[in-house]
Length: 401
Ligand code: SF4
Image (cartoon, rainbow, N blue to C red; front, side, top):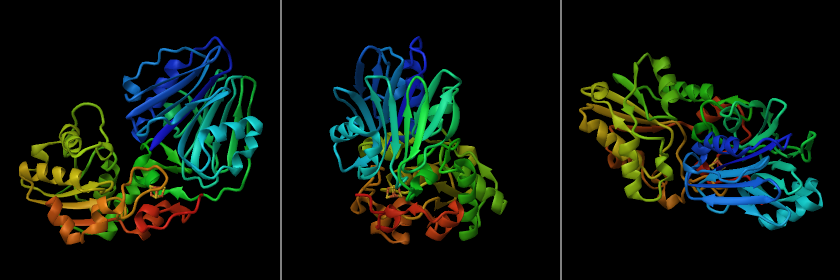
């Protein structure tokens, strides 16, 4: 998982380094354990780190730049003529892609994969392309008459005070230089949008593929309420992603919603943590339960997904420790049963709890009174679009390579 950004100022007096850093911070919910930037002044200078954007100080100055934040290392490449960063997978190597761009950026339509990319040439041009599958998002914006911005999600634009203009369409090319921005639809979109983007990957203040994420997540909660009725005293969402699910469930059923947790430190995406110890420590730090909200209560606990079950097991344990009488777990996504080949961190099926255990067994393992996952039909209904990749939920994938 990752977020990419490109910023080009129309006047060389600007130094875009700080804009790039804060824009990457607006994307770090997509993955934050590596940050890379390439900045153009007289030449392109690249720097990498295994820090999140908020901890990474960019020392280079320049009037155009690109950046990457995410869970992978080496996703921003520097060649003689350009720097390039890619969110997703491609059949061609980054170097081959850079040569394709040099020859004619329109030939990007022939690159196979599931990706969005942003390149910065040493002449000061930014080239961006979202492949026709649409599996990876990409948005276009600007900063008044001063800068053009391209980012994985609109949050990379709006957090720095930029204007979000629109999403780049699958199969669309953007060429940006000091004088103008040109866009070209190179191929017809095939549009197999990643359903995980809607469920938990994108930030709640984003629009993805034309859908407002916040509204959509409330609808997921309402759909869960229709699919699964539970006699309980309170609904609690696991922060941050599942809060709108809980709100939707509460509105639909009339069961009051409570804030069950408070957090220590900055958001830690525990499912991205690299080992069990970090996962457990991450849970404790991220989610400190509030005793008075759960003591003696029959709790409906809603989370966005269940991968290995480790995180939820700890969360349920913490609720019980503080006196919750019952804990019923609802998951705002269908069961994850298979890996993601397109660089979203969904591990192989042997690590996915829902692929290996029955519902009763999962309940027992995580210590819950019951467990329920959103149905696939429910997901289609809420998103209102059948052009979805649901590969990790069904084990069949759109063909991209
Ligand atoms: S397999 Fe799952 S995570 Fe991967 S692109 Fe498809 S829906 Fe998204």
